Amino acid sequence: MGILNMIKGQLIDVIEWTDSSNKTMVHKYDMNGKEIMMGAQLTVRESQVAIFVNEGEIADVFEPGRYELSTSNMPIMTALKSWKYGFNSPFKSDVYFVNTKQFLDMKWGTSNPVMMRDAEFGMIRLRAFGIYSFKVSDPVTFLKEVFGTASLFTVEGVEGQIKRTIVSGLSDAIAESKIPALDLAANYDELSNFALQSINPKIKALGLTLCSFIIENISLPEEVEKSMDKRTSMGVLGNLDQYAKYQAAEAMREAANSEGGGGMAGMGVGMGAGAAMGQMFAQSLGNTASPTAAPQTSGAVCSACGATIAVGAKFCPECGAKQNAGAFCTSCGKAIPAGTKFCPECGAKQ
Figure 1 (cartoon, rainbow, N blue to C red):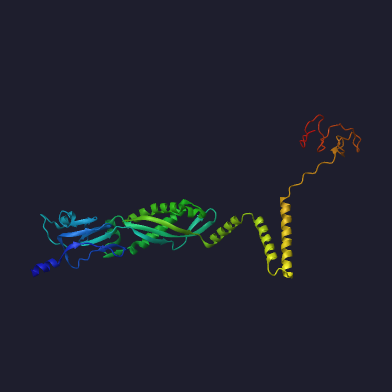
Figure 2: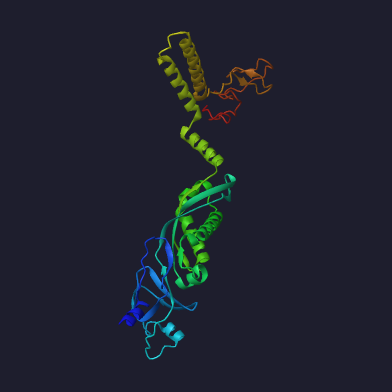
């Protein structure tokens, strides 16, 4: 019995793994020098995949579920070991548990400003940051291309690669979209979807998939933000002339209501404000006054010499030429053909 117990102690009959860190992507099952017995129970939980590696070669891959390891459940391992007729022999194999869940709230940001050409501001530099999530979509490819034979692999191992790919994809998305800098905030979703489509093909070769990509903020350079603030202030103020008048009126009111306004200083302030207000009203009246009517001609024009004569005069006082009665406009005095009902110059009715 002692020998049997010792032999049983060298065999593994239950294989499973639970992740407590939420950051582990791959965990190599610790054999502790033992061998796996045929008929052992393998438990693969949801969001996990178990990969058996025999002598450096990928053997069998197990999706979520409960398995009894046997020749029927391990066809590749059976072929490698040449087990026949259900020969239940212990075997050595490396077992890797790959975490296929989504790794959430991964932060990304531009380490250096991204250069872009804007139609309004010219060449500008942008900074951006946000979050993303990803998962292992192809465990076998991930094993071959990324973690190899490591006994433990966490998100830190691929985080840098994904971040740099994201920044590159976002730069391409902003440049190709040609969205003005002032309109970027209104197009975060469109840029995110565009970047997601351009990034996924690049990381697919690693067995990874970007599940979500969110832009939290795209910030402009300080000088561009100051220019935007000035434009916003001008837009809020509206009519600067009206604003200046309002400010002058407020200054006069405050001067009149100030506690020290009874002295000479208060009188000076009041006089200055009154003068400013008077000038403001004069300008306002000058700007808003209706234009005066055009001066009317005081007389008619002689049909012979062109001298100015009284409207309705029969003879010119300069040359004595006889004038045709009714041949002058009664409004502007211009000579018009006899019998004309409306003046061809000013349109007045005759």
